[in-house]
Image (cartoon, rainbow, N blue to C red; front, side):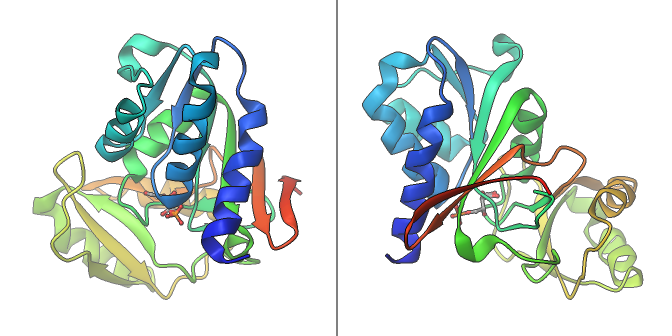
Length: 220
Ligand code: 5RP
């Protein structure tokens, strides 16, 4: 099984968490795309969805799946999304696709967060994958200096603008041990919109695609 097939296996296993008549949150990226395509096969089971990006909203709509604005949806029963890294506490690094702000909002509005990924995303320490940080454009250099003082090496994601009109700094060279505290510290930098650590609201369930099928983990 290649990496994409493992992503698909994880997405398929997440379908069992979809409750009849529910409104569910949908993430962004290639693994979330597999989930969207598989959800199309049971689309009458859900009432509606809330998307974490314009790209995911468009994909859902192409399948004829109803997409609501989060303001109209209230609390969601389920959020399904991929990740760039997860540790064994199910603290995540997300934002490789640049959708981290809306992802964090929708995850926070959901009762259960099921993260789907291939097994290569499980790590002991977060930070090998460069940490995405969404910043207000005028604060780019100020935030970059702050991140360098914290020991990181921020690189501007070239030619990329988020769905919210902002920039992404990808921070290399971090070893994130106390993920929740570091998430809070980064949130306090003026000009930071969102950082890609999901530890204050971690995943509840991690489904990993492996060569022998999907494996489900809870936080340890
Ligand atoms: C997008 C994300 C994605 O979930 C993350 O980048 C994983 O992507 P993929 O499923 O393509 O491996 O956080 O902002």
